[in-house]
Every structure is written in C-alpha cells, then in structure tokens.
Length: 156
Image 1 (cartoon, rainbow, N blue to C red):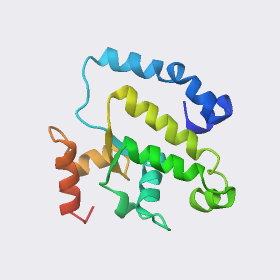
Image 2: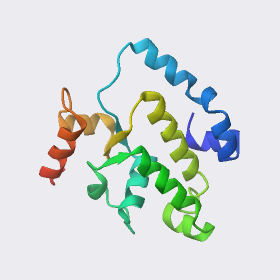
Image 3: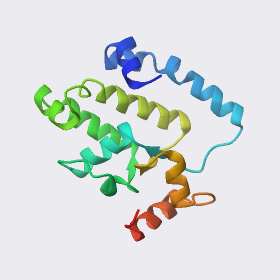
C-alpha cells in the first residue's frame, strides 16, 4: 500500500494507527516466509530522505547531504511531531502543496515497517536501492561500516 492510498483509505492518522495490524500483516507474512532477517535497513527516496532533510534543517533538498545518514526511530517520531505542529502554510512550504497532507501518513507507515522488520535505525540512500547497494558494496557489512564508507567518500 502506498502513502496516498493509505491516506485515501484511512483518512486520519488515528484510523491508520488503529488498522496497523491489517497493514503490516502482509509484511509479517513475507518476513516469516524468508526465514531470515536482514542485517540492516537501507531506506531510499521519499519519506526517509525527506525526514532526513527535515532533521538536518535543509531549506533546499540536497541529495548529497542526506545520502549516507543514519536515522533512528526516534528521529522519525520527533520529525512527525514537529511537522504536525506546523501551520498548513509551513507544512506546504516544507513538503509542497500536493504532498503536505500525506507526509504524516508516510512517516507513520515507515515507522510501522521499521517496527515489523525489527529495526531501530536505517541508512538513508538517495539512489535507487540497486544503485545504492552497488555503490556501497553492501554485502557482509554493518550499518555503521556503510555509514563510515559514505562519510569517507564524499564523491558519492
């Protein structure tokens, strides 16, 4: 389910949260079928990169600045609360007129995914997942290793 679809279906964050089990059930089923857990979570584009930019206080989005950052569950929760406290005009200024109303839904859905997948933090990659993985050579590396690689190689 996408963010816009979730907003259209559930209408309010409270209703979205009330249907959490219904939303995460297919993900739980998939994880169980896999029989193993990933070592870390890589998040790309959309909500995670936007939350990272909010946290960094970027007035203009800069993919090079968010690329390789680590966000924790608490970062998503804090930025959601900060975003919700803004006026509609401020929200639109940060997220755009057509996205401001869906931002909270994206953050809550991402928090659901982090919880159900068992992650407290994620690595932000502003590339496609395949491109980001290829750039980083991620196999058998920890999240902290990847973060260090990105900080040492600003050319990404």
